[in-house]
Image (cartoon, rainbow, N blue to C red):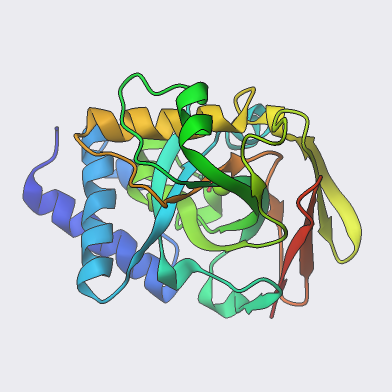
Length: 262
Ligand code: 0L1
Ligand code: MG
């Protein structure tokens, strides 16, 4: 760790306020270039603690920047991990108020629900599939708190990997009954396909993203509890949205899920 506890507290408060007030900020490494990844995850942990203290409940976990399309779009090279709480959830077909956000984008994700606890290090795709219950389609709404989406990986981690809203729905299927690498993905905005992909876009197999999350948690002395929802990461580039947009994700064999921006 490079930053003092006092600075970590201050940065967590700052980013949490930016999220709640839909206010952007320059990336935090501008003022703290020495910040390391342990600091960044410690800031994220502080934001989660503040949310739980304020009455929020854990809703799951997310892996981010898990596809080459997203890494290229954002100019970074490694996946990142974040948390989901109930205040981020949107009902299938529900509405998201754009005035609550800064500059939202949407991305299509294959989502896992686990049946057994998973522990790392050493967690593999096989372990994830063996411990999974169902997979289903989900749309993540990301909303980096950093001005003009200009950030580095450490700043993104501290900002809970841009998490802001998500919807899961469609038709859940047994995680072992489908080849998730060849699962086709069509993301539509206002009825027009705007991003196309397949599950293999996510690290070769979306379960690999869940395994990486589990190994990340293991390095930090944590496990992935049974019954966890995990968003495995955008399979395509993220698509910008504005008020009036209707977004629908169609996933092969798993139906569709949608939301509307108002
Ligand atoms: O879910 C994600 O892929 C995380 C994205 C973090 C960076 C961004 O805001 O694009
Ligand atoms: Mg995502």
